[in-house]
Image 1 (spheres, one colour):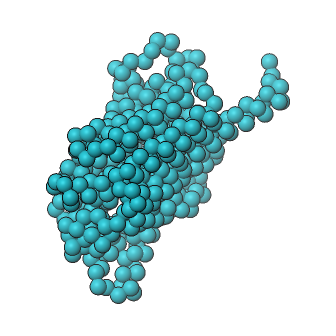
Image 2: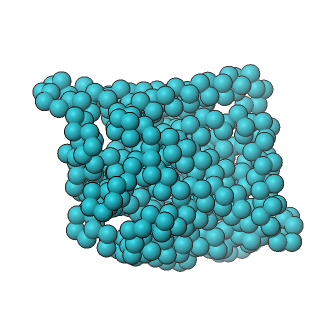
Image 3: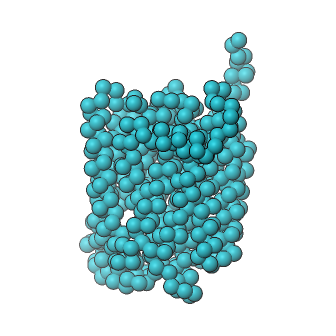
Amino acid sequence: MTALPGARTRRRFRLRRSIIACLAGSVVLRCAESATGVLLGLYLAHIAASQYDISATVVGFVAGSAFLTELGGAPFFGALSDRWGRKVFILLGPLLGAIAVQMTALTSVLGLLLITRLLEGLSTASTTPPTLSYLSAITTRSPALRGRVMAAYEVASTGGMALGAVVAGFLWDGLGAAGFTVLTALYMVSLGVFAWGLQDVRRLRRAPARATVPGRAWREYATALLRPRVLRFVPAWLLLNAVVGVWFTHTAFQMANAAFPDQVLAGGQFATGSSVGLLFGAFIVLFVVGILLWGNALSRWPKTTVMLVALSGLGLLGLGGLAVNHSGGWPLWAVAPAIAAALGGVLLVSGFPPAALGYLADISEADPAARGTVMGLYSVLLGVGHLLGGWLGGPFADWRGMDGLLVLSLGLAVLAAGAVWRLRGYDWHSPAPERAR
């Protein structure tokens, strides 16, 4: 029976409201998550200066540990969302985050801080795969709409991260460790937005009625990961996220640390929270601007081409960053080209995440019933990459501060470019490059 026009209108309105709620809730949630990460880096630098010594390697282990539980939880929550609907798991994420950040406000013990980071990872794992699964499902019949929605998700997420970095800096200067308590309110706002706006998505009729168990979720994840096209995609996405993990894990700690006085970016010149937050936030905002500028190219160019061009930006960013880091005493005319190269690099590299998301969404079309599992790879590989980058970055930062992080980033960028080139070579010879195999 054909639905009445009024019913169709109400259904379209509820679906639009759900998409808006996904995006708006993600902005607030990413703001809270980003603020927590930056505030933690500043907090650890304060502990290292006033209570007991903490190396960059330890910072990398503690701060990056969130990605252990994100890695472990993402495929499980993604598989569960395919059967039980997305809303319950999207709501669980902010709740876990609020508990974790409130615990952080009450301790300076590394062991307890490690536990809070593990809870933060579960928060992200619970929210990201169901959200991406929903957005992927709702845009199945419109590739153009999917591109816009995925780009909007990246803008929302990255914009929230930029705002969170700035908020964290001012919270640290004004409240110190008590700023973590303020972030609890942000998590609860995100919970309220999701609860109000999301249309509940029921379990798929074709899905098995029996409950999903962890072993089955991991088997489904392994099956998705071992698909040839997915497997070829993994190295590029993993290495790019390792670079991101290097900087998100170590930037705040290094900028607030005076261990390398010969370096502009790691000599304590940016010791205040507001300086760290504003600089961090400015780079993220520039990243969002880059995503918007990439919008037309994402629909007209092959996704592998966009990824390859975007990776050239990491080279510009790394070389420009090295020059800026040793520009103490330089005149403005000499520093300006290095700053311009670094900023141009950010604009270029910003095209990689939406292109990668679109590529993964295309792959998910092979099995719509397992869309949540396939899209869960986004969070899984992001977690592995960030964990790898955070752990690798520690010894490099202990070695040479910001210089060490920049050298490591350049090396990872070269490896990522090679992985994308191989992926692009396959797509050139594929008779149906946008079809999952």
